[in-house]
Length: 394
Image (cartoon, rainbow, N blue to C red; front, side, top):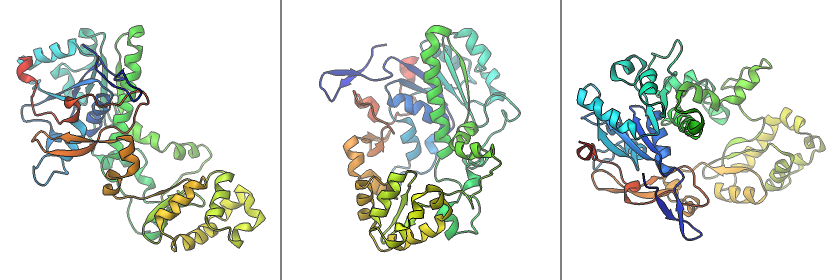
């Protein structure tokens, strides 16, 4: 396979990070599709194996009002290619063998119960393709008592413990009667996709020394890793709950015209916060120089901060806080993010052509590399049409 190159900011050509890597993706879940999406953003050639009616994700909400196309699928499939491959059909089995023969990584979220019948069980894959990194992405992994369980996003968030901790902080204070919540969108599945992508790359990096490997990814485990601090505190007998999970002072505050979050973990950040607040008399108490004392008096401190925040505009607060080295950020609307100067300067959003031809701006990747931009051409800036490469394969 010929490696792709793009112009680097320093001039000349720079190779995309995963140029030359070929990935076959058989996905029905957001987690598996996102793993392929991350690899595609870094330059891998990712081929989606879709049924004749198309992936379930092509019909997943939210939908563009004018075209009916799935915005979620557009994001997850950007830069990939589509191949119709119904594994229930014997002819398609031959196509699967053909594409896997040239592949480095297989990402698959087929259920454990169906894998053997479709020729996708780890033993069969390892026997025929000993060089291949086979990444399984399932809600509860491919082994253990829950391997055969299915799950939706809300199940995964609560099974991973994060749902037990929501809503917390200011949200819990304002709405104490609300039940446990689901984080908006597909937070847990994106965590699982990140874990799958990183494990795939680790196994591929080791392939020259050890050959192919079977990588078993559990989305529940990925969500559990997000709450690592809560798990650590179990060791000293402390069980966090949404009513108690918060920083002793700081957190989310309502300002004159919006919401923001403030975090002060270090003494220098506390001193910056005192300056931000105008060095009020209550903050001059020498006892507050002790971080343990500040923690003990967290509710009192937050009361003062809230009173001050309510009288100032959020943009002014954040600007001044950042000048003083105080970690602070505004809660922004999606429109604010898309049009943000920071995001535009980093080139995080790119014009993308949907399969129907419409142009929209999508987040191309949640990261950048110093030496090379990630986009390399037209194919990386469009959503693949269903089965676009099937005829070529046949």
